[in-house]
Length: 551
Ligand code: SF4
Ligand code: SF3
Image (cartoon, rainbow, N blue to C red):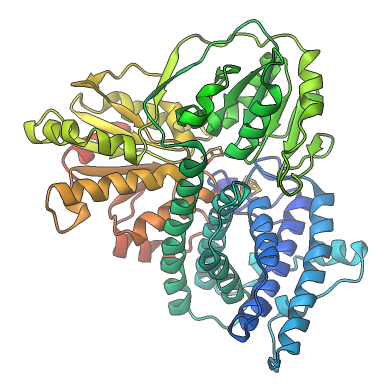
C-alpha cells in the first residue's frame, strides 16, 4: 500500500506497511486506489458525454459516495470496496455505451482508467495488489502532488455533497465539476499548469459545496444560534451518534422519542445542538466525550450502542465492537451496518434502539457545558457589538483555529496557543479541532465569548463569510487587511478542501499544522508558500507573538 492522504501518514511521507497509522489494512488501501481509478474512468466518459446531452445524477452520486468512502477513518471494509469496484465498472461501461450511442467518437489512446477492466473479484484483487490506480504509478513528483491535492480536495467535497444530498439538496454544477476533475486526473498527459488551475477550481467548487451543505442544513434544521450543550449524562440508557450527518441524527431522534432512551452527540455531531429544529427532542441530552481519537476509551465507558454516520471511526476494540454500528459509506468488518434509507422513508435504526434498551446508562466523563452556535447568521446578528469591540480596541485580533484534531502529542500546541493568546483576541473555530480548547475557561470580551464555534468543519464556510462581512463593514479592499490570522489544524481530506476553499477566497498567510501535507512535493509546497504565504507552525509562543503582530 501507499497512502499519504492524511496528516498522520508515516514519517510524514506515506503509509507503506501492512496497516496504515490509522489502522487501515493494506488490502483496503489498495482497493480504495482501484475504486478511485474506476471513478476516474467514469469521470472520463461522463464528461465526454456531457456536451452530447447525457448526464446521470445517479452515476455522479456513485462517484461522490466512492470519494467519500475513501476518506480517512470512514471505511475499512475490504468487501465493500470489491463490491463497489464491480459496480463502478458496470456504470462506466453503461456511460461509455450511452456516449457512443449519442455519436461520441472514441480516442485512439484513451487513458487506462477509461478502459481497465476485471472480469471477477479475483481479477479485482490481483489488479489492486499490483498497485493499479495508485499515485505511485505517476512518475513525475510534482504531477503526483498536484493530482493528490485535487483528489484529496474532491474527497472532502464529496463528503459535504453527500450530507446535503441526504437532506435532498444537490447542485448539478458541483457534480459536473467532480466528474470533469476526475477526468483530468485520469488524463496521463495533464500538464502542471492545467493541474494548478484545477487546484484553484477545486477550491471554488469547495466553496460551492460548503455553501450547498450550509443551505441544506439551515433549510432543514434552522439557523444555528448560541446554545449551551450539556457534557454530563443522566440515568437512562443512551445511544451515541458520531460523524457529520444531520439527517441520520434526525431519523434517530424521531425513532427514539418517547422510548426512554437518550441520544448523545459525539465529536463532529456536537454542532447539531446549535440547530433550533432539534430542540424539540427532549431526549437529545447532550454531547459525550471529545474529538474522534479518544473514542476507544470513551465508547468503553458509554455502555450503549454507537452509530458512526461518517468519519472518524477508529478500528473498534473487541470489547465494544458489537456496540458499534455503521451507516452510509462507513464500514468495518464485524460491525452491524444500517442500510441506506429507501426513497421517502427513514433509515431503520430499530436494531440500535433494541440494543440500547438492554444497556446500562453511560458513565459520566465530565459535567459542564460547551457554548457554540456562532455560524454566520448568529455572528451577523451580533455584528454591531463585534464591530464596536474592534473599534474600541477591546478586540484586537481574530484567530481562525478551525480544522481537525488528531492524536499526535504535538497537537497540544493548539491548546497552548489558545491559552497564550492575549485576552483581547477572539478564536473563531469549526471542526473537531475545537476540542483542543473548547472546554477551557477563556472568558469573554464584553459578553462575546473568546471562543466562537461556528460548527462542523464544513462550517468553516461560515467563518469565511464572517471575515468577508467584516471586510465590507470596515470598507477594506482586501480581506487580508483585517485583524485576522489563520492557524489551521488539518488531519483528513475535508481540511484539504477547506484550505483550497480559503485560498480561492483570497485568504493568505495561513498557518497549517501540525505538519505540512506529506503529499506535497518540494516544488508544489514552494508554489503554495510563494503564492499564498502558507506556512508551517513554530512554537506556541513564537506563533502567538507573530499572529498578534499581524504576521
Ligand atoms: Fe496512513 Fe492516513 Fe492513509 Fe491511514 S489515511 S493509511 S494514516 S495516510
Ligand atoms: Fe474531525 Fe475526523 Fe476532520 Fe469534520 S471528525 S473534522 S478529523
